[in-house]
Length: 201
Length: 143
Image 1: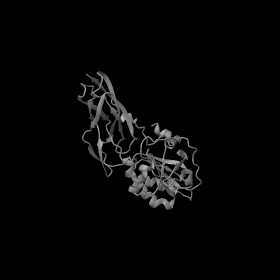
Image 2: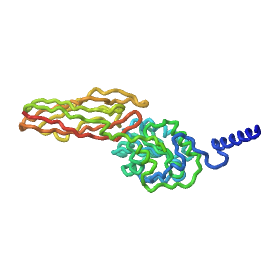
Image 3: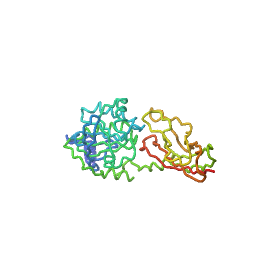
Image 4: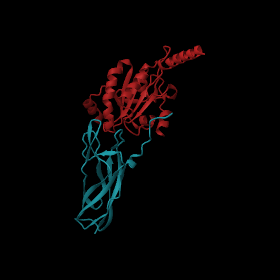
């Protein structure tokens, strides 16, 4: 009886250890609070938007990278709070496979955005968004709205407003960077069901 | 699945403009009316003099003055709040905008309506909403 109890305890400990830490070289379980499990992720719609140099940027350009996609505007105070967080993430995780991409929703486009980026010394790529792109991402009714997109091009987390804070972004990005990589499969521009479901709550 | 998104109310619900008091006066008379504005609790709009050049001010724009002239608006004293480390000049709660007119010297006697738009951009401490405008009217009577 005692032997059986001991054996069961050992087996439980091993299983629990495998669950928490992983027992193979397979991708580790994602533990960041804001990151959805792989089954709950939906493809991020692709887009074609211009950056400050006039170059067309597609989400699918970021094949195999983790993308932090931030919808923001110069007139949005909370967006301004997040910008230094994203600059730090770009600085410290770019070489590990992160790309931060800002999507400005300013009606006046680069006329307002370029001087703002210079003033804030923004170190990541920014494109000018449009209604079609916002609609594809579920409407983006409020700013900031930030999507964490995994290496497969799927939306792994959505942050609405100053939701969760800096640490949540760091944990989410780090968890996604630890996941195994495979080719991106960007969406076809339809509203991600996960976003649509979220917006109905 | 539980996702952390609450569908926000429409911007027109976060900010409402009430009916301005009807004004009446003879030709060339100075008139004044109050335009009541209400901001939903927990939200704010930038004042008419925002703390930053990128922030969008609360602003009245007249689309038609009819037989009235002028339309200069007096705004209330803004509140100072801090979001993050950013000091903001905002309006919250209920307040009146005061519009000042003069009846045109050649105005025909009778009723009329001046119309305008209140432009604003609303936020709370966590998020902001796209700039919007609300149309409103000021009824008047030329005596």
